Image (cartoon, rainbow, N blue to C red; front, side, top):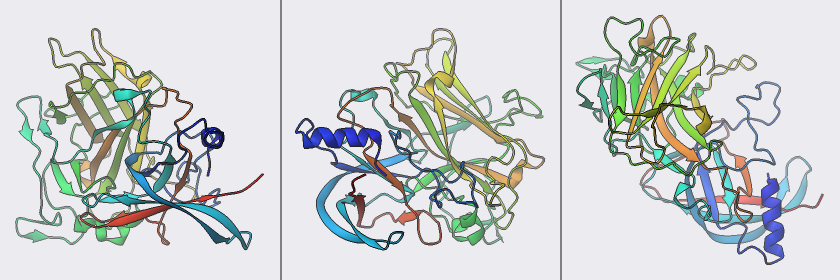
Length: 390
């Protein structure tokens, strides 16, 4: 699929008014690669890139194109051969990704946006110094490099037995090998680690009060080593949270029948700690598609900077602490865990006539799962860009 911006940039390139129209391939982990306009899925879980798209749902990385070529390929719909440009790139050896989307860009980044351009803000891996607190001194979030379905001599294959309220886990943990979890699309997709917290971690009620309806205070996680400057980003720029809801019991296919609530706070670590905060309320059955009966637990929550509530004297230029609360409002929250996979800034407001998403597609395996790129493996990726006249 080619975008409107892509057509304009290609035209400029042909007129020698642009240095390039495709120099990088972007890889993403958002969305769900399902049949377009399928009668069995609702539009909310069967997305398509539109002619006005300017970014991927959740871009994980961008790599330079190594080679370009021209091929003829059989179109299964028309049963005719069509010409396509093939762009090929090499993926980083050390990274693990569950790829669901791919796009073309004319450069590595938007030069006009400078350091306020699109980027990953947080990856929720053990390389970041996250702590968890219960309105007191914080404890370091541990990295649990053990089978999650065994603890203290007890074993229940596929289930989560480790009782930690917060922990880093391996994204390729053996619990995600089970078909029920794959069919619910629970697996983390971004990099080889993620942060998992319990379903009642923060005990949030409908007012987003962390103390509500609990005998003791709820938890939050925080990272005080960040240094974020969003001072020149416009209110229309996007903040994207990649996350998933996971059943504690592997074969329990019941989706949450209550809200999943998350608070994201950007804080100036100064006197009075002024902050900008975002309340995210994902309603009951948000992870369930009534039309198909399928579940889609991995989600990318997209909000504008204008959606944040700002306290007096808060500065977007001096964010040096990020705090997150999360919980699930169900009768037994212990039946669920929440995975935090990535937090991203998407700058869509800095207009550059020579830079935008040129084209994009969702990709999947034959059985409808994301395409796995293993860590510590050499992999290449191709984007086949159709040529046609209309």
